Image: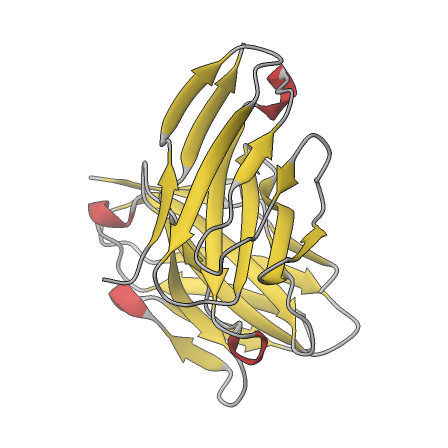
Length: 113
Length: 114
């Protein structure tokens, strides 16, 4: 992967509303794709990953993401967010034959009551 | 419990005073790396190591050194820190090259250089 672009730096949303965090990547070869979550004052945790197979990937805490090869996107979705989902979310990509992971700049999700 | 441990978690230091941030993992992982996180820039890789005594530069290596004398430890050394190295630093580890699909991160080290 050459680059990962997260299209929104901040996303405010009300509790129980759906949310989509957008991610696009650029690469001339096949990639693995990841979403990580960072809660305040903590390290990054893996939410979900796409390695191969089904393009719809389900992760922890009710999140899912869809790999779209033609649009080079890997958007993260949740149908109903909770206050506890407030965190920063990072999209990442790695070439299938490589070992370096490229991270996006992050999207800060604010869930309001 | 599988973990990556960094120390110190918080540090304020002065320009030019050498410091070391330690990193240790208990998962017998071969691959370890250091990242810095800055607002609007995400995580950028500083250095990485494929195994003991094998290290290489990442995207932003200037001003940093690393060593990998043991498999579990991967310290980050700032020989002469400058204010532009004020950042949040993460150490990370992964299983062998064929299974680099999951990265385990430490909790981060906040470094302020004044």
